[in-house]
Length: 270
Image 1 (tube, rainbow, N blue to C red):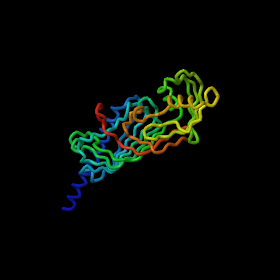
Image 2: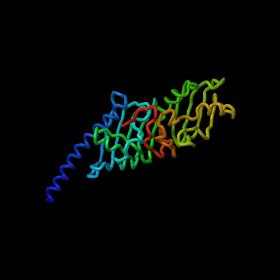
Image 3: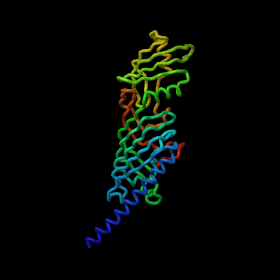
Image 4: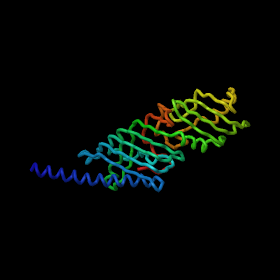
């Protein structure tokens, strides 16, 4: 009798593993359909034990690279069932364009996420219904920040950006109000609200001479915020910056991270 029970459990576990592979392929295809780019790559891997029969998943890892997207491809739908649980959700995105800005990488570890288990069982569709709060990190290189500044600030006609030793060095030319000038900025980056990145403790030179207070204000009012995670990148509160590192040509920002609720004017992600 014991052998029969063990055999039955083994059969269910084998069937469960087959279903897990099917879910992985389905979830990856669903995410891929919301991204653009001929070279986009998406994979989903799940670590499921016997508890998976009841919708308790140990871990899910999502990897994607070489794609373009307007805003996030992943949202939660709070009105859906919360019966399924993912104990640890890992997201690794690399070499992609987010709302027109190229990103080196975006990594996140998010615990205690919930998903719609009845939908998953009926249709092999995974829809998150709640996100835990984890830690994330986004990395942008200096060249891509340079391109983004030219795209965002029409007053700036030419610019070069260098990042090193916890400072950002911005040199260029532009037209600010009635002032047409070359400029140099040496500054730190801070985020007082966790969303917007501002140039702070700035030293500014215009046409090779130190800027006076009025000139400095005009330039900083134009450039700040350099980056707004929500309005520029459409992250919808996914990341809130607590620390910024400027080293070796890279801007790294990290802080609390979650999968945001789907906006009212947008269909859900997988």
